[in-house]
Length: 339
Image (tube, rainbow, N blue to C red; front, side, top):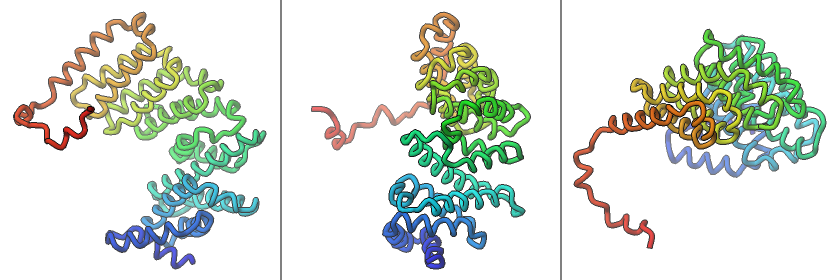
């Protein structure tokens, strides 16, 4: 079936809508267990194009997410061990092999492996399993963390913050050291932003763990990274992570309330920064005020006035549309109005 499936992968990538639609119908008819059996060899086959291997990794993650019971439960213990070993073997070859690394294919495979780890750890937690169900993935993670491929380790943790399993507290010092190093000013900005998102995900994953308190010691590095990343990059994802952690666990940011407000207001008032990032910075300020109102009144009362001025400034930057006043509401829109 491998050769036929490779042709199917090619058809799934076709620009012809008819060919792609037929391929999608054919792929949908394959059950979860069979998908697992044909996707693994495709991802491992270096003879396939990067596009096909990339699609294979994306489909694998989707299969694990959507068809978990169908693809995993029928497998024997030996078969599940073979799948885990094969996936890590392919990723190891991509990361540490002699062939130049394809960043996109590697990242999508990391996503699939992290999703598999997440599902396995969830199932193990329901059974109160005392030991880690996939210790080899931790060995690989630490191997990457101690090499030039730190981003692979960070992406594994980002996509599966429970990856350390039932003994996650004992890895707190290792994680903090890894994250502090990754946020260093001499590191690539993408890695620094990735480290911030990892911190946020780890805290949100287990807000009651001892790790949360230890991570508060690196808030100065985290906030500095947020400020620099938001000014230099075009993506609001790091600020979005900060907003999510404020909503989920406000007390985590409490020791650095003033510093975070200063940074986010500076981002919001900077006209050279991407508009979406400036908007997210305002949302961060508002969320901080909603979640820690007493802290704001006590330590940063002047921030309220400053934020209001920033919002007015941003409103004044909106271009007037001379045709807006002449526009009428289409009659069809009346149907959407409440009775």
